[in-house]
Image (cartoon, rainbow, N blue to C red):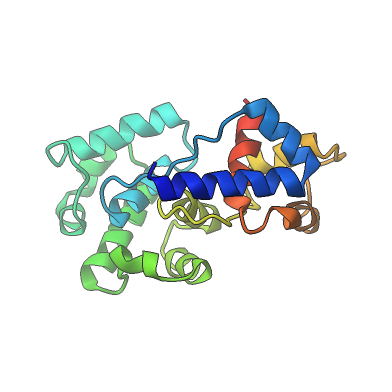
Length: 206
C-alpha cells in the first residue's frame, strides 16, 4: 500500500477504536488491518470477476474465472471479445446460462457506450451503485463489493452481507440477525470508515 493509504488506514483504525469499544476489542483481537484493493486490470475486468464469483465458493469461482481467461490467451476478455465468443464456449468453462447472459449484457452496455465503466471512479458512491445496479445480474451487494475492493471507498456498509450480519449479532449480543434499523444504529459510530469496520467484522468470524 502507498504511504497515503497507510496513513488513511491508521486514521480509520484509530477512529474505530475510539468510537466503539466493542469494535475496539475485535480490532485488538484480530490485529493489524491488511485491507487492500485490487488495482490490477480494468474496472470491466473487476465486474466480470464479481459476476463469476457470485454465489460460489472462492475456489470454485477462481477455477471458472481462470478457465474464462484461458479462452483469451490467459487474460481477462475485452467487451468486444466477450460479445463475440460463443455461448457454448462460456458454458464450457463452467458458467451458468444466467451468468453468461449477465456477462454478455455487461459487455454490450460497455461496448455500446451506454455504460462508461472505466470512469465510474469519478462518481460519488451512490451514483456508482445506481449505474451498476441497473445492469442485469448486478445487485446491491456486488456493487458494494466493487466500491470496497476495487475503488477503495472507505465508508461502505454492505447491509445485506450475511457475514457482516452474523458478526454484528455475535459481537453485540443480539438474539437474532440484526434488522436494517439495528445495523444503522450499530454502525453509526463507524462513519466515515464503515469499510474498515466491515473488514474487521469479517476477520472476527475466522
